[in-house]
Length: 288
Ligand SMILES: Cc1cc2nc3c(=O)[nH]c(=O)nc-3n(C[C@H](O)[C@H](O)[C@H](O)COP(=O)(O)OP(=O)(O)OC[C@H]3O[C@@H](n4cnc5c(N)ncnc54)[C@H](O)[C@@H]3O)c2cc1C
Ligand code: FES
Image (cartoon, rainbow, N blue to C red; front, side, top):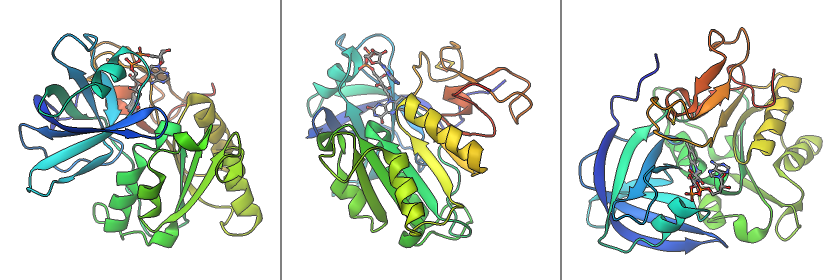
């Protein structure tokens, strides 16, 4: 039975800042009270206020930035799209207030090595959140694998409109290839990230064999899964299912598995403890 990760803990964290980001998001910076080991990109934390403003059930958020502040203290950032009660409450936090922080949870991206085909990172809207650290960790070298060179990483960022291409400058500053697409054509190519991928492959900027990572709304992930299967590409999806507990107890985060695949003995995987990152060999959003 999958269990919560051994390095997860429940603690409080002090709010350092809440800065607006794009049309409808904030970057929440917190200082955890207790030490944490380094966190792999695309792992997540459950967050809530403890003063009654938040719903009882904390909400899951990918770690966005992780690093020491100028005073040397460990601080974490979360990119939060303001949607319902949970995110509204977090966005209203003020410096000095304390939040409940549970994590790190989940598995995180696979090791991005610098050997083999280019990595193409497909982000849709706030699905960009797990990618900034993903790029930084790939460039720094992960586990014992060879570090990626910036030209081996292609970050394709899509959104409905340019105000939802959150913190684009931070991605451009990493030095990797960055391309954008918007549905309304207000920034980059008119269309979506798969249109961008097709353009880059048609022009010969990218080979037909690439390795895909994707995070974004479910219809986008279904389309990515479909493409990966059709072309036999290695592909991992970071899923943002609804979650109750985040630690494998409530069964609130089922993801259908591929029959006969690596998780095939069960018809559903638990996104919170077996994911949120899954290979398309293991799960199927579009249905088997
Ligand atoms: C592993 C993981 C990592 C995540 N990382 C981030 C992140 O870095 N930044 C971020 O902004 N969000 C992230 N999310 C999504 C975030 O958890 C939800 O947006 C949040 O729970 C919404 O809570 P709320 O109380 O504001 O909205 P609610 O009141 O719970 O919901 C408001 C509306 O949004 C819909 N909704 C809620 N959650 C989702 C979802 N996951 N997908 C689609 N629709 C949803 C609801 O059905 C409802 O219509 C992540 C989710 C997971 C599982
Ligand atoms: S959120 Fe409770 S089991 Fe996954």
